[in-house]
Amino acid sequence: MSQHENHPVHEYSLETYRNEAPRLGKRCALVFGVYVDRRLPMSDRQVKNALHFSDMNSVRPRINDMIKMGLLEQKGSVIDPETKQRVRTVGLRLVAQEKQQKLF
Image 1 (cartoon, rainbow, N blue to C red):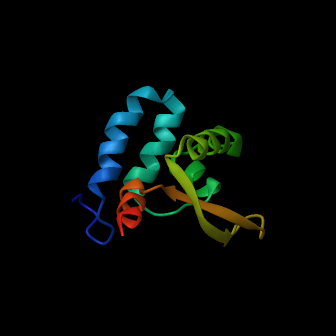
Image 2: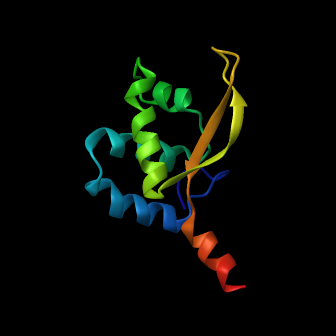
């Protein structure tokens, strides 16, 4: 378990990060690291801000790539405080939970 007691990291998430981060490109690994560190669904803007990037296109293509790779998944939506538009939130895909559900 990590330092964030309110949001424990599933061992699967840490294992996935350790296994996948070296195979990801530099920026993709940075974006994935934000999700592993925060352990909460986030909008693309929240990820951009966490990394102190100025352009949404610095993170959005990488998030989309990791959704296609099965590392992340869309979790819901929120109202973006800047645009006042509904935007997606994305978080870690917890395959361990899916595997367990298939057993029962």
